[in-house]
Image 1 (cartoon, rainbow, N blue to C red):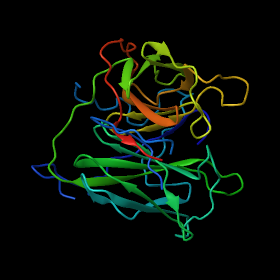
Image 2: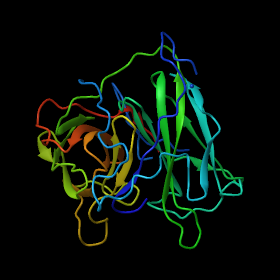
Image 3: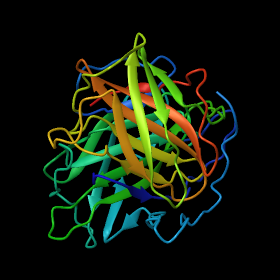
Image 4: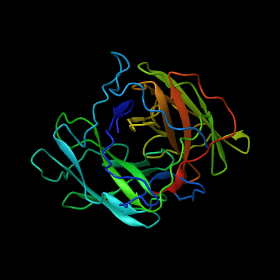
Length: 319
């Protein structure tokens, strides 16, 4: 994953109808849950549609190209597009090149060859997973989706080729079971997770770079000894409500580069591809455990006010 901004938008391609049942669904990473479990080292307003579907909010905004499952000659081949909600199962997929061959060589970025994000379309459930790759190029990871409905799978990687660019490919995933629509959590600049309070300062702006600062505290005291997680003191993913446009950034400065210290402030620079509502997911590590704090913000509007903490990402996480 590149330091800085990367945006990939995806089209909704899930052909299913929600009724009383939704007909379908070593490395688990951060997730958001009603009562999130902890893993050692290893609410409310309808979601608005994005106001600029093309993803361009200005000439300086990186193109939001990626509504497709294929890009740059590579395709995400999701072998398990359906799972059953509440049942643990292996999620399997392969990245294929332009000739249909499975890719078996990747550049390592932030300690991993590939990073996998799974998010529900209502942006309540989020997981940052780290699947394992077999010799034939097939990736797999155990996953337990808590609720029935539509999900989006994002594969973030860089092929191990000269001049290769980082890519984020997406595919739809469905979880079967009784379905109930959920609203996007309300905007808030404060999140509470596992006894930690995380404060967000700054605003996500469409078409213009801006700084986001997040401060971690516990028991009313700043946490000043955050630990590196995947080579950084924090990871931030933003997903746009509606089409789940994907944005991944890393802190301004990395551990060991002499420009950052281990908390409590984690600083990011980000540019929103358009105005609209976004869900931010921050992963941070303290005392050997990774936690995920979640925020709802609106790009192109006033910064969210501090208030009752909205919380965490659903279902904890694994690595």
